[in-house]
Image 1 (cartoon, rainbow, N blue to C red):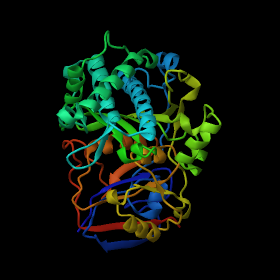
Image 2 (image 1 turned 30 degrees about the horizontal axis):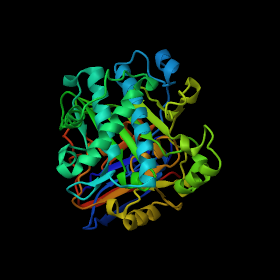
Image 3 (image 1 turned 90 degrees about the vertical axis):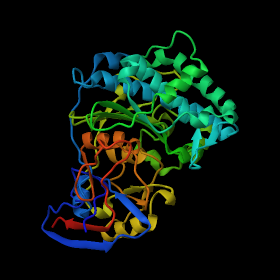
Length: 442
């Protein structure tokens, strides 16, 4: 029985996933463990081709610059393209969202009292989740009209509206208004007066779209990787736009992900401690980054964060990114989730060894894994979710498009593109046997 699951790989390398492109190959077939659900693979195409895992990511090129964006934030946007305005706004509001998250995370590290709640499924949700969702919802409605801002997002207002959440709601209101008052720093209009509690609840509640195959839908994960966030580690803000079932733009804000790959050799908490002794430079880990792309441009870009309105990003700070060109399995690095509850580490390790991967995995919270692949810090992303877990579109939409435009190809294990037209879940992922071809260039 064939296995159709999400995978990612990069196109410029020789490590193939599920797509035989070289001379020598062998079949790899094994029963699918009962407790393992849908796998995701990600990395450069050449490497995935060698691995025979399935085509996921490949590097493309191209760059256009918008003088208006360069003048204010240094954002490189494809001028004159169909979605240039939408991408412009999306990058700016994600920069704002990163600012919110950094402030809340600093507060969480000092004391988590009143800043975290548990949802019905016991997963954590923070002031940052609701504040980002309210801010993004308000900005999109102001820029494109509330009727044109259909938003699919992770959080709802039920938990926040309960009587025992009054304290956290007050924190959300204060956080949102503080951020919106600084909107001009990011090239966006601020409200004429602070938003009231009901207005903020309405902004969060508007994010109740279920997406689908028709029309335009924004897709938001306000804080992807909440566990990483509350632990002072990696997390991401993910915003994408889907039109008629196809992802057309994606933005990833990664506040704790270093601009320079070299900083990945150091643990984030250690760096935070050291930075208190010696203030970080502009190119340091603390800078963070925003990565973005638009369908059809064959390019993706990265820019540093704006920190507390102190420094506007200049045009020379924006740079194009591409997936890795590594094409030897033994040299390739693969990403996987940190939490064992989100992926079967043992199964992934066995698969990695079978296809020739020898390096230790890069375990990262959230969609930061997609950022790592897109800018060439790693070559493959493998995720084997537990049985019964359903992948949601906000956990993948932005990252998938960015990898594609940075030179990658994203498919399931059967070589099919991921389908974002079925609503809030990635549907059509069968679970039976993992059956794919391992291909080795020879």
